[in-house]
Amino acid sequence: MTDRKSAIPRLFLLEMAFPDPMDIKICGLKTEEALAAALAGGASHVGFIFFPKSPRHVEPVEAGHLRKLTAGKAQAVAVTVDADDAMLDGIVSTVAPDVLQLHGSESAARVRELKARYGLPVMKALSVREKADLDHVADYAGVADRLLFDAKPPKGAELPGGNGTAFDWRLLEGIDPAIPYMLSGGLNAANIAEALAIARPSGIDISSGIESAPGVKDVRLIEAFFRAVAAARENRAA
Image (cartoon, rainbow, N blue to C red; front, side, top):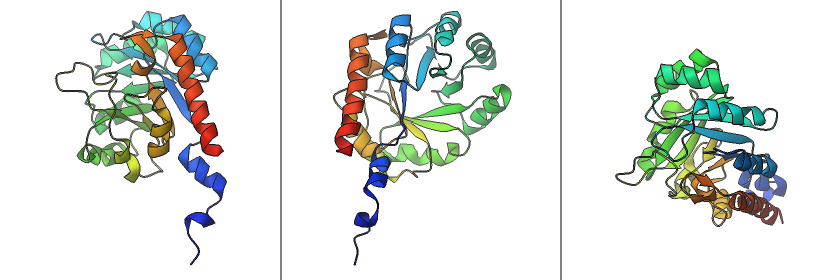
């Protein structure tokens, strides 16, 4: 009997392992310098966080200025946590994001409501620590335009993301490949090759893994991350 895997074209297997093109989102940006490094590296998405408890929080006016610098280069993502309509109205009118990312406990109904309210794609983050945490995927698949799987925050943490912790990427092996998602949580230049090989996401999201201190993006770490992603893809292809 012909081995099923051997009958699949090698190029197709490579594309399954590392989707091409693969989206790369650099999140938590606050300065022109860090934004420039993200764009130079080839980021497809840049994220601005609107959550006062986060060291990466940025005011809408500041984000609006940075957003103008991304025009035609990357998609601007507004990241919020259980934000009300008034807050979102201000963000959307001032920043004009391309995508809304909901990183709180927003329900599928809330996702649907905001898509209709703003006419923007919505990405919904889901926190993962164990297999049972993925039971909610079905609730959001087909409602959110994309999912983002992030590590569940440590007990007592105030931030829903950006804590520098990873989860077991093998938990995603059973996810329907037709569901578009980004992988996040504890990613850095040292582990990105392993993460890509196991999870095979169509996009990746990084924030704390390219910082010299909480909320302080390091241009050298941003550049090193992009080099690590390129090396992982090249090694896989070879």
